[in-house]
Image (cartoon, rainbow, N blue to C red):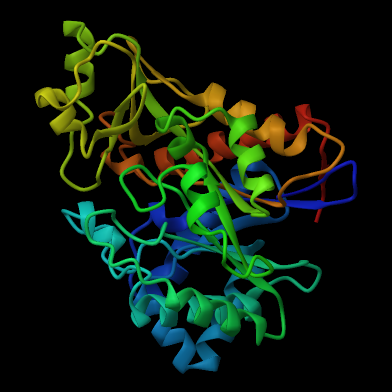
Length: 375
């Protein structure tokens, strides 16, 4: 979906396909028919944006075969889908039974991460709609804090590779709890010397909330550092107002699951590296908790839990409520649908949920004065 800001900026809205499992091209193409097109039809729009996740094996397959790229481009067009952004954070195996810390490997101290990201940027340049101003690829915030070797030489190679492309694609580092860059203050400090023409920040509003950051202050820090919000990921975290209340603890326990890491903070970082650790005494429980568990945007969890949707709404208002748009790529990224305590029972339920999230975001953008643009 597309929207026009009052300053003339064309704003793209997509949903991220890392919610779907696929590590080969046939699987990615099947997603388009099984989920992408049905979501578009349910929304009643002629064109729907996807934030594609292409695992390393898929990216390798496409880079090696121009005919495969043409096949993907044709399938997108046939189903009324378009792509201006990739999620390049997970490398592969994102739907393994246990992912946890593996999602941060390889990190930005390795040439493997650089090669993968540049491959994604080259592929995105071939898939961009003709009228798209640019593309974006979001990526991890350098690495997990305890594994990082403080080697940022790969970022220079990344910027040089991006500059050599025919169509502009920017890479956005995504602050996340527990990582080398977990806050916007750390982003402003650790990315101060990167090539800001090509590199910037992906602001994930779930992560922002888990860090207990104020959206206006966070955006101010990034602007002061000269770092653009290349992309915003519209997401909401799990919130517990009274984590020591027995009913609240039982509700939180239902969100403990083995696949993904669910970093938890009480008031501000540092916190517990996973929700089970927080519940086992890693956090005192004397103040509200926010948990890195992406929950649906349009519907609150059952009481006594809540979501940080107000942080998302405040961030969108800061980005789009003024006289100038402060980004042009918005990606709904609730990748946790299948591990929710009340996970959808079938494809139809997942399609309905994704469409409802997109509709909530669409209505939020329109309320901020953006005009929906038909295809």
